[in-house]
Image (cartoon, rainbow, N blue to C red):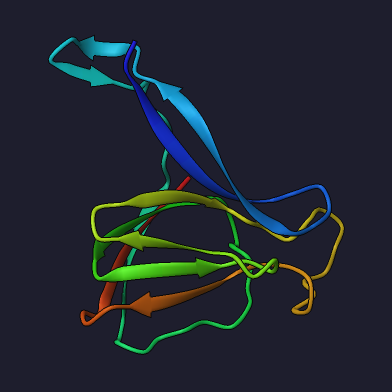
Length: 127
């Protein structure tokens, strides 16, 4: 059966942001056009970030898909690791402040940055 790899940025039990991957089975459609089930969405938002952009440490306000439409986006984590997402790639951002906690800029979240020669254009699909 065909599947799709869902890259997830999430808040682990210790409150730190991490990446993991999940398999989404493509159980619908035809052999020529395998589809996942339909998932709900509530809206979308577009963003353009200029060359040189880098955010502060932050958490995602609510889970959302992030699609890189142009340029490259780097996501950095507290453990010093980072992951680069070029145009055409995407990830599911669910790195939210842990339940019952207040955001601590010394502990929670991730940073994002534009990389490469082109401005970064992203589509945020709210779920």
